[in-house]
Image 1: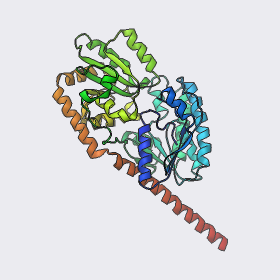
Image 2 (image 1 turned 90 degrees about the vertical axis):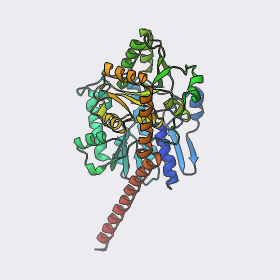
Image 3 (image 1 turned 120 degrees about the vertical axis):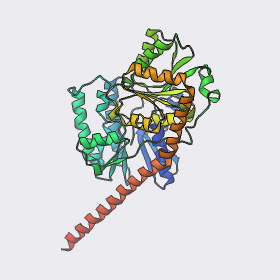
Image 4 (image 1 turned 60 degrees about the vertical axis):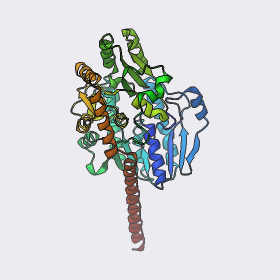
Length: 422
């Protein structure tokens, strides 16, 4: 159960598709219960998928797309109402689906609450990619005293309590769960991965985005690839671009993605009159190697105090493309620890404009160092974060949950039989 699925373009849809295909190869039968495809799609594709509501991607991968057929709204309140209705229809469908295990995503945040009722039928594995409502606080638009945050805290505790098991994607996330009363035995950690055979380094001369968008291959590209939202702090990056525009005419910033504040960011760029920043739309997943390889360096940015409750998995894609990571992130975060231990990039503290600018200038001036950091990142991925290793760990968790349920069911039946006999 997840909010989005391919062909929708989000930071996570390719991971869900990888999971389904690999689980199928291990012998599982999968039913994906998701929303009507709309996010990140052109109008022609969106209309095409309005009628593709129940289909098989393979003999043992069924996709059921249900819920609202309208485009996803940008207003937070409207998106919340849509998510609430989406959760309701997903629950009805999931409840009537035969399964050994439910795999429940953390978007929309209401979805995890369904574990209380669905686990009566089969064990539930709730996967935590985004700690809600911390993610709302991190945008700077809400505080702990806000009504929506207080409600979010209640939803959070309900979700953690009532699901059979919880999976998370970072050690920081795991420690947050433990600090909020979740037993460590109820948590499994599996890092997100990257398909290292798909996201490969591509030389600039061979990159299809150069011709697609009329980019100058002679320039030094600084890229941001992924979500454009409140927590990314991309306005600071625009300010840096403005500072460097006159002195470094061969330096260009390219933002590739979409999100709730994309329009605001484009207005900010226009109002400042910055000419060395381009904003491009999300690209099809089949072009991901070109997207992640476009930059001579690639950014992972956030506002302050986001680091422990956020782990940008696009970092693995940057590293897999053998590009150095320039991180503007909380220095005490697991992300910065990994980047430093892998020697795959440079880290400055979140919201430290001068620190980020200096890191960019360091690699702009030392192209050999940039290349070495990129190669180190690629090697780290190949050793630690391959797709098959990660998806098999998930599968093993499912198998254990299903076997434990069968054992418990057998024990209950045996106890019931003894009671009848006596």
